[in-house]
Length: 226
Image (cartoon, rainbow, N blue to C red; front, side, top):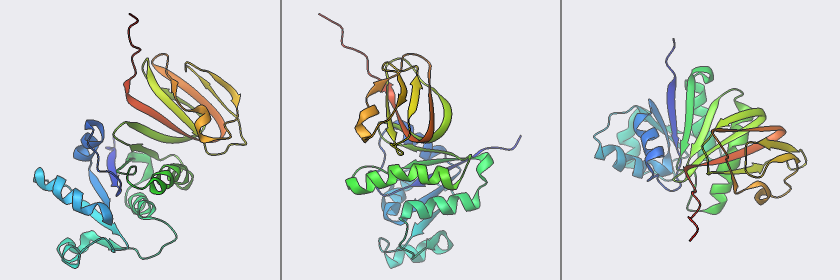
């Protein structure tokens, strides 16, 4: 059986501190690093004396000339400005590793500037549209995000916090297995289907549009009554 390649795309938001994204970074087969994130990636990989294969990609305005020289062929300059560095990194990753046997994990895509955070999260839908069938997720210090259309069942656990953001608000979606079930719901604002909760070991979503689904790593256990 062909081995699944785990590709990490490291963006330039807050560098991860939670064990889940840090484990993904440690276990990655290849790292595509946005140029603005290279400084922190260099420090982190240096701590572990890591020799993991990687490239750095971007327009180069965040890299020193000495870094560009030391990186050599691992530095990939892309000057076009229609897309941000995260999109450039994903485009490179999917051009080098086949979608059917690769897992793409995005780290460092949130935090710092809120406009970058919102843009990067919405890119999950763009990536899913551009690379049908690709296994793409975004990990933060609090949970994981995925984009979906059609029908999908997610592994879960009781009291897991689940938020759903509709990226096509005119199209309805339905959910089963959540504390507050949704049937043909139209979320015309991003907040309207957030802060839900899983009841058991899985929940299901169905839509003709696009959803971004957030799941926490840890359950929110209710406080015991006094």
